[in-house]
Image: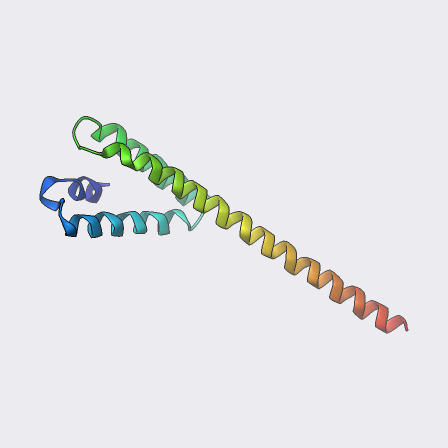
Length: 105
């Protein structure tokens, strides 16, 4: 979170700021995508960052949409993984059915 404070300092508000801020955001998203526990830790840390920096840093409220996007991405990825696993299980059931059917004939 200290890096977010640095990234929001006037000295970093140039073309490099954009890259610095984007890299930090990507790193936080990668950490959050590891598990629900990690996602919640990142969420609470960014929310606390917003609370602490409101009135001190300009544009700190732009991190609210970041949190929403992070949660959306996490749960979307999680649901897609579940869907893929369900599909693989169904394929296994079909294969097992065909194997049983062939062995009875």
